[in-house]
Image 1 (tube, rainbow, N blue to C red):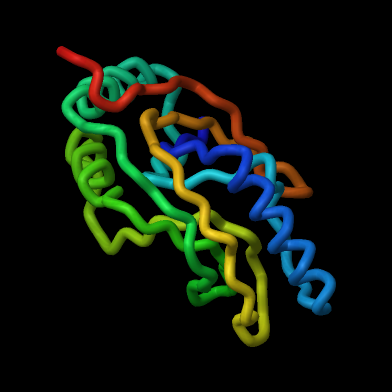
Image 2 (image 1 turned 45 degrees about the horizontal axis):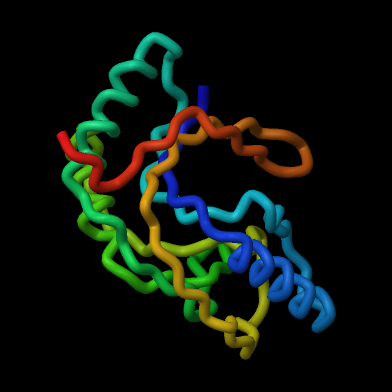
Length: 167
């Protein structure tokens, strides 16, 4: 199964994704748009994992999340990565969560840029749109299974891990 960890975003962010995508479409931009209802902030992509390692992954994530406090976040800007990924940037200290989970899962490190993906295969100039800015608190890390379909990935919750639960 194809797995990743993420922060689920509130309905206000789902609405911001839909509003921003509609504005970009109205300006004539073309891309492979994400489903607003599937919006999230990826923490780690784990890739294909055998079913038998799932209990170990879940135990590692549960232990890692116990020692972490909830995190205040703000969706605040529009940006892009090479390869045509358009996103809404996220400010807040997700670095500690990313690092602790990475270490718990034995993953390689690298640059981490928290964001909510709006589109893939986006080409052209970065639009001059400003997101409305949405503040929220991330209090749960979610493990998702991703199912690839012709019209885009569909994400299914496997488990949720509260941040800051006592030992």
